[in-house]
Length: 122
Image (cartoon, rainbow, N blue to C red; front, side):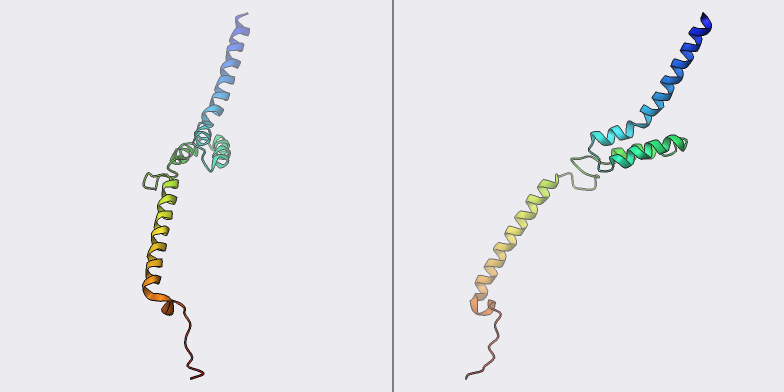
């Protein structure tokens, strides 16, 4: 009777370890999925490859998954959202258009037309 109980515990522990390792190797993929990482599929596939390469790649997967955040991208920006950059660029374009209109107004229509008088018909 105890032999069967010990065998049951041994099988249970083996299954828990087997699935535990798989769940452990899916942690970088879960982080990537939570952060809406653009390379989720590559991280997931590399996690499976890491199972067969004696877990050498796994720490790099963790770093790769945690580098990206949806609100700040890869972390090389100034901490502002991409939308604020678009608004700032639109403001700069509007300012440049105003300056160009002022410069064209100062130059007058004769200089801004671009036509060259050939002198024929004089």
